[in-house]
Amino acid sequence: MRPGYDQPLYLLPFDHRHSYVTGMFHFSGPLTPDQRDAVTDTKELIYAGFRQALGHGVPVAAAAILVDEEFGADILRDATMNGYVTVLSTEKSGSAEFEFEYGADFASHIAAFKPTFAKALVRFNPESDAEVNRRQTARLKQLSDYCRAVRQSFMIELLVPPTAAQLAQAHGFQTTFDLLTRPALMLQAIRTLQDAGVEPDVWKIQGLDRRSDCEHIVATARRNGRSKVGCIVLGHDAGEDQVVRWLETAASVPGFIGFAVGRTTFWHAVAAYIGKQLTRAEAVSLVARRYREWVGVFERARALRARTA
Image 1 (cartoon, rainbow, N blue to C red):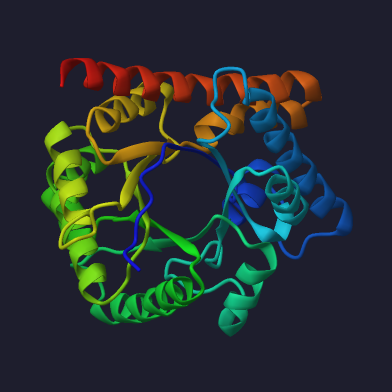
Image 2: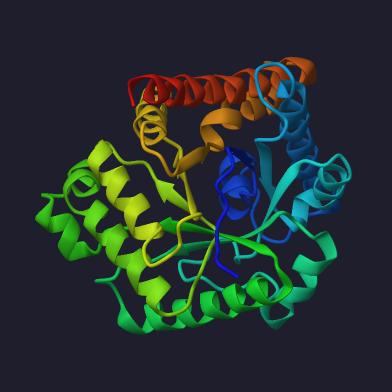
């Protein structure tokens, strides 16, 4: 079965765990039941914002959520029951190296929820530690093989962090690395994983500033008969103006089918809710409005592409 998913995909990701618990709540160590309930409550808030946006500028068929089993099991069940596109994270949160959250038992957890996509986040720089990359590739191949065997759609979130040498070459500027060095490394990473038998249906890709780089990403993701493989652009906790530029650039390229913008969508709303600056209803509406904004940006840019093609 050839990999691929070429339908519009507007993803609201809120599968953040370690960074969310420590950064939003400043909790550390094993969570108490009350702390766990507080985290789960805010994930329900984000999901309520997603649901509020449906039918108000967000097409239901394209709308999707990405959430974790730890705090979002009930959300996943409800979303599946309502026929929404769901994405389940499989990686251990807070780990620099891709490892399964539930180790060798990963398959049973995917099977229990039957998400539309199983997702793996991987930090993969082809010029970084070769042994770490080898181990990550082997685990991703294991997940890819399982998904193909059971006809489970598969998504890879590819992050390419700079090595110390690459950052030094960019004079210490992440933005310089992102513009001049990261695009070629992303292409190399995709080819390396494909050649190792890792076959996602969708690549979740860090934002790119140049249309030509987006075109190269699609061409690589779809090479050698992978003509239906889709790409979505992620927000990477960037500011609103940067997210808009990335969405507009990606939407102008056939093969970029959507986006995944999480923290830029929900972080302020949740923080204000926790700090009692917004009511729950106000926070839900803010999440819904931000999510609708990204959909509008992407769809307007895609429509412009269609008119000028």
